[in-house]
Length: 223
Image (cartoon, rainbow, N blue to C red; front, side):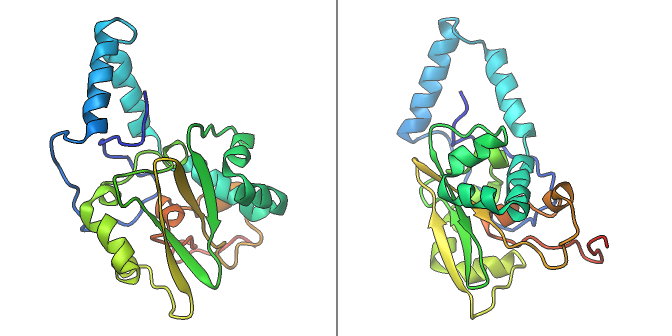
């Protein structure tokens, strides 16, 4: 019953940046919204599922955070062979780590010293939920969906992310058939950190591309 158009607010366990982008609150009006409601109510009426099962599933999705995505990124940072498989076939690579990503194509794009990528869904809120959980409300707002395409550097600045002028900024537009996951640059000074420690540096926003992975302020990698 899970799908990529849930309107519940996600719980953020990685302390990602809050923005002033406001969500668009409205009654269901699109065809897919009305269809989802009709099918759900019919399944409940026929006894195929119960309202409690639907509620439990929604609550489970609301509790899910970006930890699985962070584990995938950390593995790619320490395992070049896994990284190559991840960039070649995201679905198959994350499945190796027990992360089921079915029904849509997962495309993993690597940020580099030359190019910074950020993700948007200009039509609705398509998002790699199995890895990152429920999208933040700002991701679904009309303002972010339009401005990220028109003025990405200005949007990144509002997130506190400054991209140097010698790095290109590319915006990736998710679709109903394709989800993007950003593989952020590994922070400097982390050579001696374990895979688990590296995963703690990976935030939801860094996997959307509105931030970069970095050492917490005042911290340094263990020697």
